[in-house]
Image 1 (cartoon, rainbow, N blue to C red):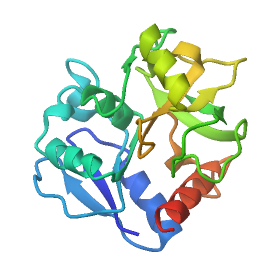
Image 2 (cartoon, one colour; image 1 turned 90 degrees about the vertical axis):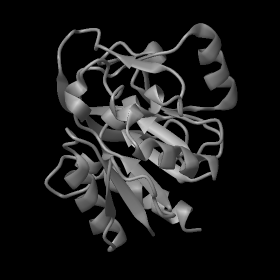
Image 3 (cartoon, rainbow, N blue to C red; image 1 turned 120 degrees about the vertical axis):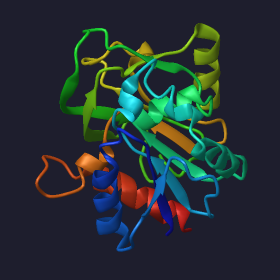
Length: 224
């Protein structure tokens, strides 16, 4: 299992992702600096959370123009798997590799706590493989701009294609996201953007190990 973790100025969850992948796969992921232009073939590219370039302009806007993005696009065009977590999700929407956009939380403050997300009935994807629709995963959030917005026509398309991967529980939408959306897939199911941080629920010092289960399922499917 070959995993790359893209690092931008301001990334601050790259080490957490590294330790999570290492503990599960027993192999060392490779850090890729944002100025690199020739990424070798990987089974999975992860764009971690953080505050790339200080979140100036819009979150992920500057990072989406970094040299490494061309290689990420090339990886996507080959059907390669890409996971964007939090700021990584924002970058994927800025590059238009995923639809929609992430805007300021409706409560106008930074949110950081555990919550449940619900797995949706999706198109075939390694990211939701192994989970039954309606399964609950307890995974923490930590964001200021996690309010997912998409227009009505594009939302209908997401629903029709089965591209909505995760939703927050109906009883608790933390940030105002359209229809409680917490994660979305690309049209081919090979790219996932999600606001919750699965890498933070991998080790025993957390209340949940659901992030570990998420990564285990993902790796098993990518290697099958």
